[in-house]
Image (cartoon, rainbow, N blue to C red; front, side):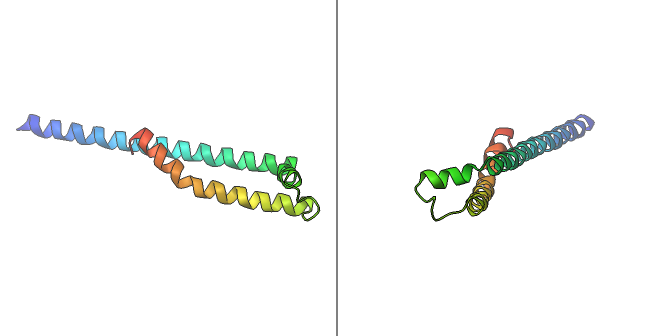
Length: 97
C-alpha cells in the first residue's frame, strides 16, 4: 500500500514539473517573438521602409514620409498582434502545453 502511494506521488510531481517546464517554454517563445517584432518594427520605421513601399506603389504624391511611416507602423503592429495567438498555439504544440 505504501509503495502505491509513493508511486502516485512521484507521477504527480513529474506531471507538475513537466507542466511548468512546458509553460516556461511557451513563455520564452512568446517573449522572443514579441521582442523580435518590436525590434523589427523599430528598424523598419527608422529606415523609412514603409514610405519606400508607398512610393514604389505609385502613391508618392498622396502620402508624406511621416504619414506613410506612421500608417506602416500601425499596420505592422496590428499584424504582429493578430499573429500572437498563432505563435501561442504553435509554441504550445511544440512544448506540449
